[in-house]
Length: 97
Image 1 (cartoon, rainbow, N blue to C red):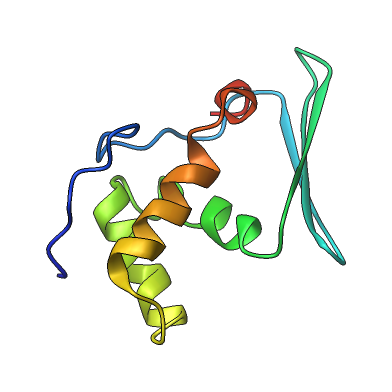
Image 2 (image 1 turned 135 degrees about the horizontal axis):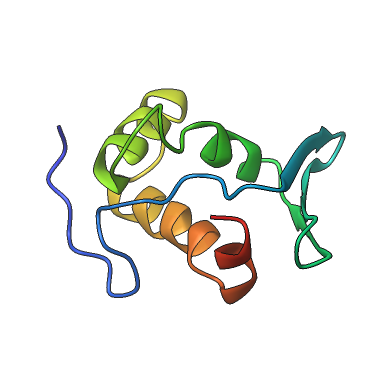
């Protein structure tokens, strides 16, 4: 496992998809729909990969990032971790976790 610098906005514990969330991949990435809050969020092409690695696949950001690093071996671990954390941290994403 690659050593990680703690991300200032995200703990190593990651959430699971909330009840009532619809995830659908589209040509440009994916869409998340919270049926409870009636909020829709678009994800870029990396977003669906991050979403598919959420629990129960991985329970922590380090494990999720290690998996992404295997998919993107040319990526720098610290940049990949920041990108993954950024995709999970914005306020709208909290409606879906």
